[in-house]
Image (tube, rainbow, N blue to C red; front, side, top):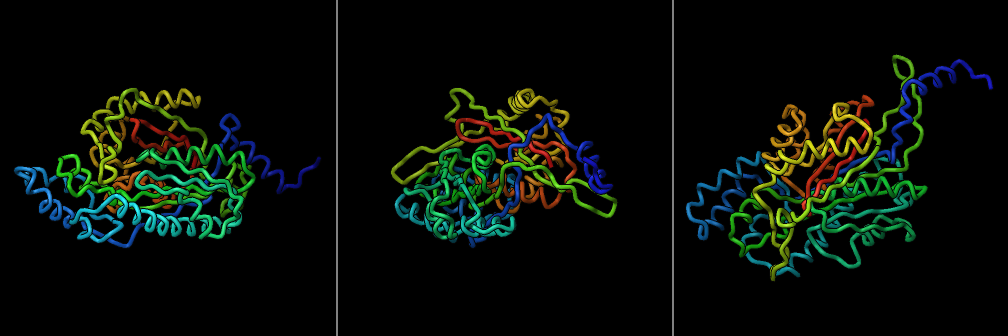
Length: 383
């Protein structure tokens, strides 16, 4: 077959830029985020905590600098701040979870679908990730109906992964995208504030009060397709695609006490250990090396990092353990400062900011988060 000059040029570009040894699982079409309307400044939460915890924790002023040390400037919560000043039953808080989670999930989903130039009817599968409330039937069913999706859309609710849920959910969505001939919608939604235990005056609850917040993120992705060659001012180039190339999961043995929920009369009580930054320092580099070995690459090939900002000290531990500059995690720090730790959707907020800020280069990147288990979830991507 004889190629035209235009086709010949396209053929040569593809031959030079293809990386056939790394078969992409899926490509991301869009990322969108949403938060509840109650914007709270960190200084106001600090004063709230001083008043509430001051009666139970001696010398409370010595602990209050943790609010500044988080680097968080403000957060969005499911309810006004004064709501958290009174005790609430688990059924009451969970009813609010269902209401508010549905609302912000729909906001994020509608925006993501519109950004991808699709309609809800185009979606073939929906994954819903959450750990901060309960609903049966799961909220993905209500989301489907509110969006007007096909009643035959496949549903995959995922519960209990906590902060690791955004990366794990994206990995599962990329895998499952290969099984459906239609785009896949991933939604990660958490309302951490509604798990606040008013009667728990422990230091662990004070730390959680300084850190956690609420939000939702949605991602539309599809089975990876051959890239198109498009014209720009300098000739022809491959159209940019954020490609999910691989994933790696690790469960640390006998580590369930590090992070999770204790089920108490009032609902879900946070369990979080001080040892997470130390664990990152010890385990992050070996984790990355193990994942790279599985993917058949060298760690030095990874040029970009999209990390879940578990906290300011965790970000510092990432930089130290990976022997890179703190500037590497500027997108994670920016999201932490503006929104706090929203658990599973937070890393998807970081991804959205990263995609807006970093032009595509075709280089490899790592997306990762730690969560209950204690566990680590990693994704290899190309952008």
